Length: 124
Image (cartoon, rainbow, N blue to C red; front, side, top):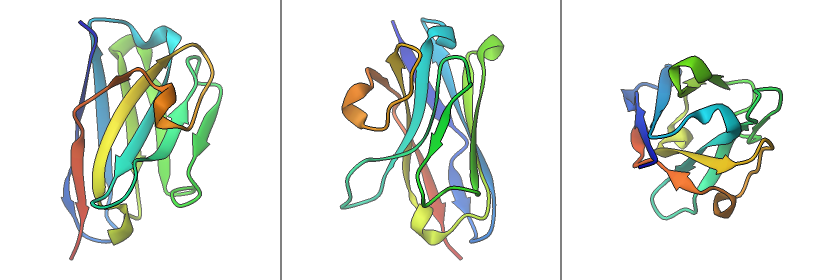
């Protein structure tokens, strides 16, 4: 059974940092592109960042460029999202998702398997 499990969310003050992790089980991430999405209350799910299967290509939403970094460790079957300089507008549930194939994509409907999400709250 293919599963993804996110962790690392929590409450942080503005300007703080968090690192999210997404661990895959039941399959190897080696041949999958991976993305982080987020969804705030009352808003649509939006792509935060994605990375190709070989790690050679990445994409970031304009709102997180320069603050967030996506990375993957295929040996650990894990993807990370390092989030720095967090802002209240980053508050959302963060999801990781995978799609078959090497190339990245930025729309949710291109992704096949999703985790349950982890809450990130940025507040003083």
